[in-house]
Amino acid sequence: MSHPEFHDVVKARIFLKAFEDKKELFNLLYEDMEQEGLKIHIGKENRFKDMQDCTVITSNYKLNDKVIGAIAAIGPTRMEYGKVMSVIKYLSETIGKVLGNLG
Image (cartoon, rainbow, N blue to C red; front, side, top):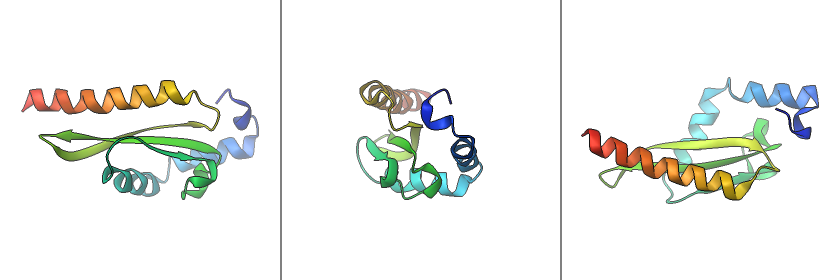
């Protein structure tokens, strides 16, 4: 919230309101689950209107080669893409490994 994009109170409210609409967030994650690897939606590429001032980076995770979920990072369009992409990739792989070890 400290980035300049969110200094505008109206934009900040829209961004926070987007998290209340869990159906739209679920739909975005569900659509991205079907594709391998990282998916990046920058600004206007987000079909979710309330996220068009943001970037959403998603990745699915698997258990026994079957996709069972997805994770996402949501932030300003000026985020550190390399860093965030590395973290999301690492987390999705780690979640799959941990779940595999539990079962």
